[in-house]
Image (cartoon, rainbow, N blue to C red; front, top):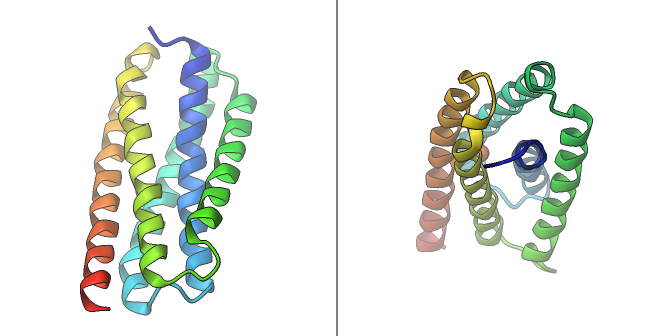
Length: 161
Ligand SMILES: [Fe+2]
């Protein structure tokens, strides 16, 4: 059974990944690695990520009250995770990054989000409010859509370069 500490950690990581995915899109765009045709679709993905982040933040407050979760611990895990992901991004992009690598990094980030929401879905039953699981499963579906979108963009870019 997942304990409180595990739930706090997993929510924090999911939140951190949300933050990092949005920041990643912003940064890759400002570095000229994403083309306008990519941004048309990724802009929508980023908006959705921002909504998901908001939803999760609301749950952190609710679960702090109902289940005694430590919201400060969750927030610090989120920050730590977001920092780790931005380091991973730099490592992945390397010295002379191109559009293909930028799109593939986004696949990596979205893949991480899918996995984390899968894990959260598997432990969501441990919290008292059952609606939390419903939110997590809804976000998981959206994340699967994000991963599919990024994969499609990466495949199309590779085929047309
Ligand atoms: Fe996402």
